[in-house]
Length: 324
Image 1 (tube, rainbow, N blue to C red):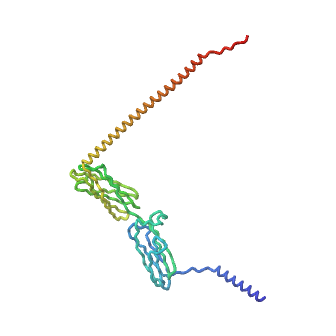
Image 2 (image 1 turned 90 degrees about the vertical axis):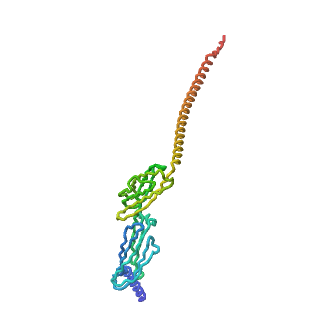
């Protein structure tokens, strides 16, 4: 009986201990280290930017810290920063990054723009304290030129126009200026510089330059230099150089080409005329055939009808003799 009471008391005490343990609040782990991260939300393609990290030790003892830098992946850190920080001390550290426009990450498809991820993890004495993700939008500043030469072919003693279309291939508006150069035998007849002012992303503006070709120029290909200068919204200047090939043909070749084009045009006109005549003749033949067919059909009809009527008139009536 006493043994049974002792067992019962033991079970009650055990249950009480379990109840107290389960219902007691769990104290959160306290870390003495904290950090703040200062990374830009936007960066320009192929330009360096800096991410700064400040680590604070709010504790009364020293700690070993480690920073793990993950760039565009969460599998392996790109590099690490570690050290010892004393009580109430502050450590400033950071790193520079440069992203190219060609470095398109999977996260870009999720964000809807060319983005990169810089994830920074702080550890204290080997235990993770905090992780902060920083999404960087990559801004592209770029332009392109589309040249058009009219008329062609170009030959000695002729003139032509070179139209330059400036395309804003970037993510922000630009101020663009086009500078045209000339050659000894291909002289510019219009203004050298053209200011196109503001061009929005994805938009275009055009400028036309006029040239005169010398009579004594040797046929061949001549590169015309075009310089494009543009400024982004920050005031930073960019420059690009292009060479537009101008093909100069000899006058003899041009005349032969013109003759062939004239003969081809005459052949096309003659063929069109013959085709129209054939269509008219075929139409007339079709009408004649239709009239003849109708006439034959009507003639056959009237002949058949008249023949049938004549046969009916020549048939004698049958006489039946009555009995006497």
